[in-house]
Length: 431
Image 1: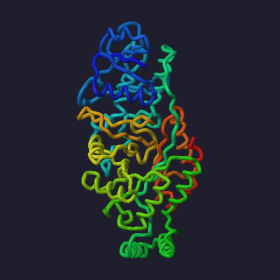
Image 2: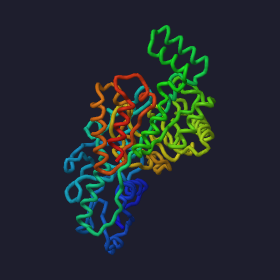
Image 3: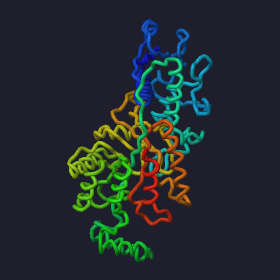
Image 4: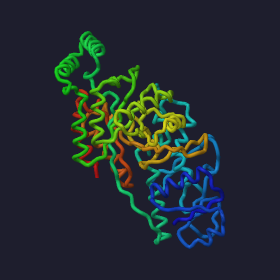
């Protein structure tokens, strides 16, 4: 067991140490604020404070983990053996920056609390982030820092034990529009037909007519193919279904459609079913609970996992709402139009609420690839190269490679054959 000495044990300190050591490095830890306990401890130990006690493994601390609330930060990004880092410290520290303060700053999304800049959907823009502005958005720096720290600890304490983690690929299928034309009812179908007719959308008219003759011809109905691909490559697939009433941004099949409900049940026999929360539920906790309950009633199992429409995350309020609605896991942490690591990590982590100074009981699973980041790219190979680059970074640290694809884009009309591309992604990145 690794003993960590510090001058003050705060919720931020405890949260960060458990994430870095317990969840990323699989090392058992304990804490102490007593010098005599540290001196007596015969096993691996480090100090995290302003001054070293002896000639021990010492990391000089920034104030961040011992503060409360928020304050504007002046951050300069440097390098630690070619890995970007910040919160640099003076000489004497075994590591040239406060790895724990920097990790907390990224994991807690500290910068998003301080920013008032949002896009049209109320989302934090990736270009505002420190990682984007300093060219490390595509690197899981928190995991890299932790592994470099581990190497130094092993040099000092060769006897230190840990269990190794393994790489995982989780493939998320976002189902906010399960069918383009089928199962939408006569009125919606006929209205759509007239719109396509008078706007001369001939391809949609052909597709709509083919689907009316046989619903299985619906271009978005690629679910059987997706399930078979997950089986073939032994990839954990998760289907996030929107199960909401019709609105401006929520235009899925009616929740009362028996065929839609049967589809969800049939996929639930092979894959995990979760909720793609509607746009309308973003600030409506009662509606969010209703959608969760409706979907649970269809699959006859609890629904504990969520994704928010358009990846809308407003920290800390979005996560407070998910906790109140009794979700345990969320898969929204990432950017729609940029690949990379929004929270600097490819390891699941619990959300820390800075305003309340508590760790909220919801686990955040950060994704690093979203298919809509590639819609304007010219070729299949260009898309695959971008995905491979991010995959290699995750593989280096044996992290969790979470990708988000939508049945809508996979089945839509495009120069890129998205189903074939998706199959290639699974074949190349499942191990």
